[in-house]
Length: 427
Image: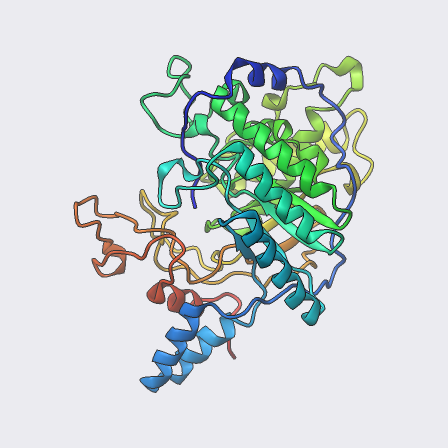
């Protein structure tokens, strides 16, 4: 999972125009569906790969590592909905809800089947058409019904809009991105406008359920600037959801995600603030970010951006009346427990030296952060990362082998995540 690929120019200028005509309204979410502190989160059945790995370790009398893998599988994590017919996904959702009811727990679903996902990369695929996707999402919404559930809607669908995909056929080639890879008006790209329409439709279907907490994709702090991400979230309909998620299938540290997410939430409020004649309306680009006045590679400077939001939002004209007026956040902590010095061009793709992060919880102690979740299934590969750039597709970080396909079990990585977990899995 890393984004979404380009497809035919089927949305056209009409859809783009529709988004530019959207009124800018107050940034409050439609309803507060924050999970209470201490909510019990659902633990799915162990992954088949984990069962095989633990059995193999026991067969070799490696009891400690077998226990590590077994313990990892007892911790709450998300259930991914990625393909199949509406009938298929209905059965999967209903079975998950039944199992969650038996645990008296709340399930977390990752909805990941948007057409042309992942920029033709390791997790390429998705529904065959907009109509097929709409029917598939409708089946999920109907199956959830009045059950309490958390839905993380389409990782990378917004942070990797089609306009952000690298391609020589990009219709915005005459409007090149800035130094951070961001376009001035991504929602005007016809394919991106179509993607935004798909997400808006999915939001409407899922949010119609009274107990579903929907969060949209906002990438992570080492990617888009605050203002650019806030702008895309706005046009995707975040104001009609509980908020947005960060760091899904990535490895960025939790404190940075908490700050970045808080800034995005406040930037959304800033860019929809009608005070003083509404001169801020639509100007998400005015927002401070991790790139300015802070420096993205010097965390000690992030206090400068904190100070900007204190002055311009918290203490500015018409400040938000409490957290209910701001979009909320969830953070994927499944693989960010260790931040090694290793880095490379594919440091998002099965990087070595990482560990499981903070346990899933709805008691985060951070005002706008509703939960820390294990969204990505620990132990599943990011893809056949061709780290060495050769025809064999080998990965020198893992012994010059070929990494498993995206979503397949990766025993070496799974064991390393468990061994380096922070906090530790075992005493």
